[in-house]
Image (cartoon, rainbow, N blue to C red; front, side, top):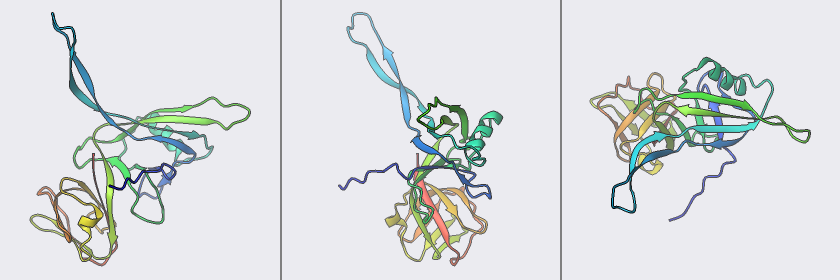
Length: 235
């Protein structure tokens, strides 16, 4: 097995993705992605010297960020502060693990509203830090997840992708590249670039040239020709 380490140099936090006000939050140099954990239940009994431990309920961790304060970053740092003041729940942000504006193969984390309808981001901290004469003004913050996220790690873009409305809905690729790109059954699928079917869906099965969606999917459909991008991922 060849180990491919994920370098952090190209991480990014994008707000209002796909909107006219889409922006990369400026000044960031520290990002911690959310993890998951379970509480520990400890059971003690008479005449037993050692307690027993069991895994209890789980929780989704938070996402933290930090860096250098940038005055006038209205669509980035100021927008995060506004979300905090207004207690806004938002789903149109992406935490990129390797952001590159030149391609659509970058891995990212989003609230998985397909598997968890209440999933969203909320800013709970946005704090200035200590500054001294030899440095710049730092800041840090924290974003909690209201529900389940998805990390999108499978990607494909092309003009040979067609969205087929049916029972069930399917997606076809003339290049038969779905399996090679890493799409799998059970993933949440994100469609971008279509005329009417952009959004999140659940993958029921995958073959080289066909993705079959769950029975709950309801696409309008679109013939191949336009450039369509697909992303797939799970918790």
